Length: 260
Image 1 (cartoon, rainbow, N blue to C red):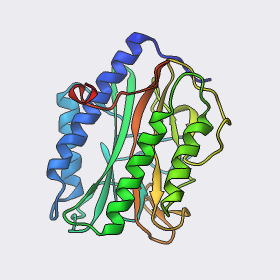
Image 2: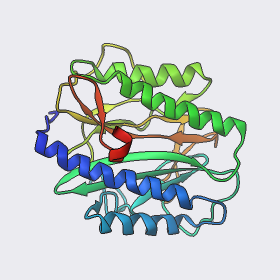
Image 3: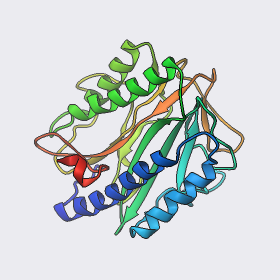
C-alpha cells in the first residue's frame, strides 16, 4: 500500500530533508584530492546529529538475509561505483567523481538524497555524465503531480539519458519514503508512459537516476554492499525526496532559501 502523508508528517519529512541538504552542501566544500572518504562520513554524521537527526543508513539492513548492516552515515561511490560505496581510508584523487548518498530520520520520518561531485578537474565525458544525470532527475521531477503514473517518471529518465548516449541502471530503483526509508512504490529509471501505480497528492517518493557511461549491467563487490558497473564505466547518481502535490512535485531535500 502507498501511504498518503498528512501535513504534519510532511513537515517532519521536510525537516529531515533540510538536514540532508545541509550535509550535501557542507560536504561539497570538503571534496578535493587527498581527502579520505571516511573523513567525509565523520563530517556528515556530526552535522546530522548536531541538527537533531538520526543517520538513516547507519546500521541499515534491508532484510534478514542480507549479510551485514551498512556501517556508515553516507554512501561514497567513486567512479565505476554506482551506489552503496562504504566510506574508508580510500583517498580521493584528481579526476575522480564521487556520489554521496545520505538518508536522515527525524521524529520517525525519513528523507533521502544524493549528489555526484567532481574531484578537481574531470574529463569532458565525466562532466557530461554528471550534467545528464542531474538533468534527468529534474526532468523527472517536472512531471510529478497528482494523477500521473510511475511510468511517466521512469520514461523521462530513460529517454533523456539514452538520447544523450548513456545507459540507465536497471538493478536499482527509486522508492516511496516516509515512516520507512524504503516504501512502495518502486520508481524504476526505465519504463513506459501511462504504466505503473498512480501517484496521488500526499504521497512522497525518492527519485534517483543512476546513469552509466557504458553498460547498465551491475556487479556487487566482496564487501556485499558496493555496486559497480560490470564494464567498469563511470556512473553518476542524483536523488531528491519529492512530495506529490496538485501543483507538481515539491522537493523536500533542499534548503529553505533554495525553495524561494
